[in-house]
Image (cartoon, rainbow, N blue to C red; front, top):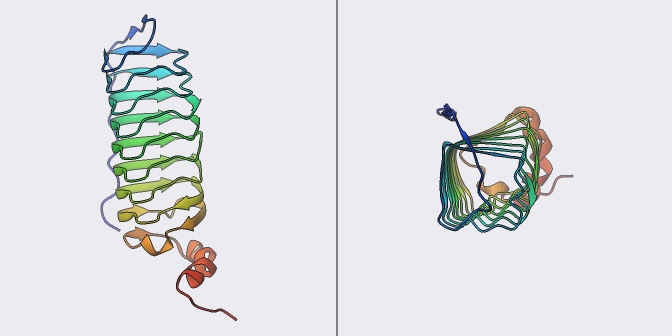
Length: 215
């Protein structure tokens, strides 16, 4: 196993409470705290969030395509169908999310920690993940199809029905995933490390993928 993931070192400055009426496309948000804000259905495509904290916000259907989230903390976000496709998340801590169908296809994640919570049907197709840690969280049917993962760690994390079809892995540590359930893309696990017990659990699926008959 190569080098482990570098975690974000987040030190937020004193924050001003956000008092806006709504998010705006290409908006510039710097040093703000969004507390229990209802951002449902709002359009902030192309916006930049720098040194911000979002706490307990509703982001159902919020459009954040091409947004940049930098040096920020998101705590307890909840929502279905949030669109972060082709967004950039750098030096971000995401804590206790309750999300479903989040769109991050084509996104860039660098020095990101996802800690706690549950995310259903996370779409990371064609995304680039570097120095990303999934810790003490539940990921149900995450889609890493065609994604590039480098120095990605799963720590005390449930990984259920994951799809790695066409993905490229380098220094990916899956040993902390329990359960480790891979629905598709077993042939793409070169570049990952797993534990002996996980190998035994995956053996039937690996045999099937390789066309080996076990009797």
